[in-house]
Amino acid sequence: MRPFFWGLIGAFVVLIACIFVKAAFAQSVSLCAPRDRVVARLAMDFDEVQAATALAARGTVFEFWVSDIGTWTIVSTHPDGSACLIASGAGFSGWGALSEPEGAQGDL
Image (cartoon, rainbow, N blue to C red; front, side, top):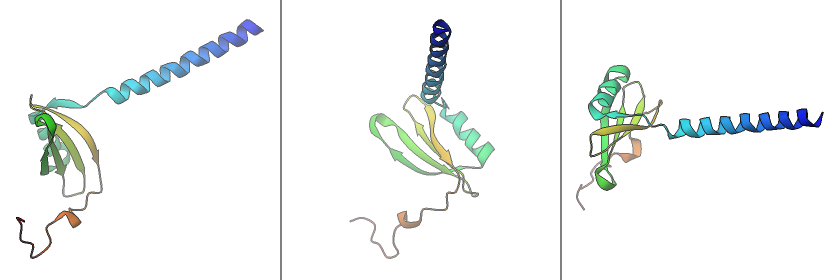
């Protein structure tokens, strides 16, 4: 009875370890492709257009893409021409408080 019990416990531990390894691997897989392919897919599949860009460290550019129906995607584009999907979702409703207040002077 004891060898069967320990064998069952061992199999359970191996199963749990496999689940954690698979989950860790899935999180490490990035969705990257040449930028022109990523942009074409965002336009064709989601009708998204580039709404904003921001320059980050080492020449990486973060791009915010949105559609009229509220889908959005954040893309990081690297100096080598590759682009990676960072996040995406639905429910984008505009810039709101980010727009410049009426009567603002612009440059300070």
